Every structure is written in C-alpha cells, then in structure tokens.
Amino acid sequence: MTNDTGPGSGPAPFEGEALRALTLQDTAVLAFALLEEGAGDALSPLRKPALATVSVNGAPALRTVILRNFDRKARVLELFTDARSTKVAELKREPRASMLFYDPRRDVQLRLAGRAVPLTGAAAADAWAAAGLPSRRAYLAVAAPGSPSDAPTSGLPAEIEGLIPSIDKLEEGRVNFALIRFGFDEADLVVLSRTGHRRARIRWPADAPVMEWLVP
Ligand SMILES: Cc1cc2nc3c(=O)[nH]c(=O)nc-3n(C[C@H](O)[C@H](O)[C@H](O)COP(=O)(O)O)c2cc1C
Image (tube, rainbow, N blue to C red; front, side):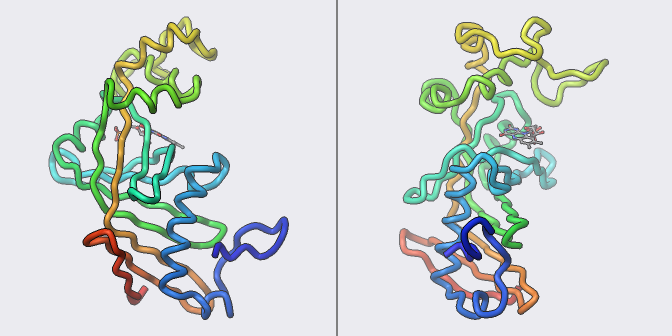
C-alpha cells in the first residue's frame, strides 16, 4: 500500500479515494514500507532521515544520517557513525532518541521514538565488513568530527584525499567506526493531503501494536 499511481509514475500524495480508503492498518503497513524503502534504495529520500538526541546540556540535537539497515521484526534501524562524534557521547549518556523521515513524493512524515545504542569493536564487526569502501574511508579522519580547523577540510590525511585507499589502510579507521542500533516502540505518521490530512500513532507496549488515529 504505497499509493503508487501506476507504472513509471512513482509514489504520489494521498488524495481523494486513496485518502478516504486509508485504514489504521494501512498506515502501519505504510510506515514499515517507507523504512524498507529507505534501507533498500540508495536513491530514495527516505534514505536520509534525521536522528535526534539529547545534548549534554539537555537541548535537542539533530543531524542527517544515512539509513543502512532495517530489521522490521525487531523494529531496529542501523546507522553508521564515527565513534568520536558528539552523537555517540550523547547516546552513551542518554539513549532516548527519535528519528524523522519525510517523503516529499507522498507528502508523508514518519517520526519514530525509541532508544539508540552505539556499538564499537567486535559488536560492530559485521557492520564494518558490510560497509562499502567509500563509507569506510570516512573513519580515517585524523581528528574527531566537530574539531575546529584553520582551513576547509575533509579531515582525511592528505595522501588519501580524493581516492579510495587500500583495504589495509582502510582497516586503520576501524577503531573509529560505530554502529548505531535504534530500536523504536512508537511511530507517528502524518499524511498531508488537500483532501484532509491524516495522523496515526502506533505504539508497541509489548510485541502487539496498539494503533490509533490522532488529530493531525
Ligand atoms: C546527506 C548527509 C548524510 C549524512 N550521513 C551521516 C551518517 O550516516 N552518519 C553520520 O555519522 N553522519 C552523517 N552525516 C553528517 C551528520 O549530519 C553530522 O554532521 C555528523 O555526523 C556530526 O554530527 P554530531 O556532531 O551531532 O555527532 C551526514 C550528513 C549529510 C549532509
């Protein structure tokens, strides 16, 4: 139930009959379909959600991330990051986090609330092995993300600037690699429509979902 309008035309906003026919069950199906699309399609706008954490001083902190994997049964999303980044320190202190996805083609917003755990070393070994070589290169950055620099910089050592180093060289960055596993127990979906918006919330107090309509 993705409201695709036909071959070649792709997803579209929910209007008219498509909106009126939308059931609570459909919204749950749609939420999971959006996450699967984001994890599976590098070109989808759902590939680049925002991750919100709580900063050390209690303020909200937001950044764009790339969705690497989605396990629908466990309701867990996976992200890659630098173990030295601020977000990792924030999550170690306060694992409560949320994620925001917006699909401009369907005009749908999906917010997820849950807990995110950064894993490094052996716990992140499978993710490191699955990461593409260009992804691994980022972890060779000499200084931590967010470090001040006198000049514009990629942060990478000069000798690997603009190229993909050997596997052996990439291995040196492994120590800086972290896998973030974000498990969610609440999803809030807003469908924007000229016909009249819709909003649904799905919560998982246990394994079985509890769904309800909300005023958008
Ligand atoms: C399109 C895009 C995708 C990004 N993907 C990631 C990502 O997957 N992981 C990551 O750690 N940072 C990613 N970033 C950089 C973050 O948005 C952020 O600037 C960086 O991780 C530092 O965040 P922090 O200081 O809050 O930890 C991405 C940035 C952009 C613009």
